[in-house]
Image (cartoon, rainbow, N blue to C red; front, side, top):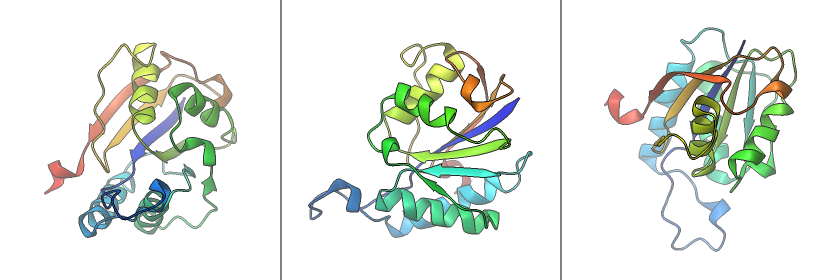
Length: 167
């Protein structure tokens, strides 16, 4: 069994005023939410031992708060294919996670993350209406021994939490 936490980036500044969507930073609330959600993952077993993230500014800032909350000192895998990715591309990102990792966190963007969670848990990205608000985490246990065995329908959703529930 492998454990996957799918973490949507926290609340970012509006796109107006940014020439490139990837340059948008987190809002003040987004920074607080990312840290709070990171503290939730710090209490989960098994502990996080791999983080892979989109390299956009808002996902980098979300990941920075996550690593601080976890006291995570290992390298973060920055994967450009996560930005604007289709669920099938995200499944390929999971396949590249080292076999030794037991609990991975994927930090990225909608709608791809919602489709990934739906596909893992319901057999296809369009079979389940999953809503990941900003800074939400979907925690999924995968019935696989190795990450490259991840496929649609192999997951069981353990929890889906959004920061609004913590306020």
